Length: 101
Image (tube, rainbow, N blue to C red; front, side):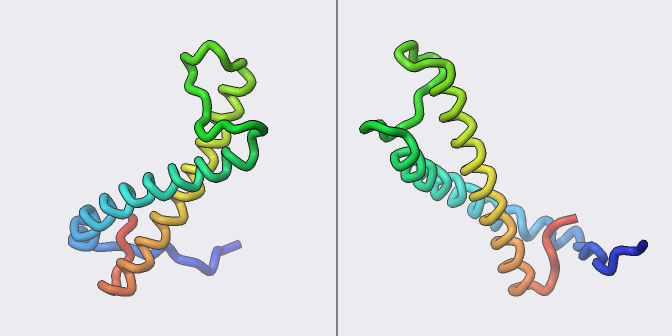
């Protein structure tokens, strides 16, 4: 079975031109992901906590630390994927070339 989709090849110049664009979008993605995570965490965790416990904070159980880390990783991963993919699409519309491999 052949997949009808062929990966878009990009030129070396497209990859080089995308680097600063990708760097800025990654920084923005980190800020957005942090804000999204704080809002999700406030709504998911009972009480008045606004931040996930850090691994070295002894007043929290291992379960609370691991759940906070799991949630944070999931939110950051999804937001980063959305922003990276969206940035690549914008770059492609602007230049006509896909910035990836």
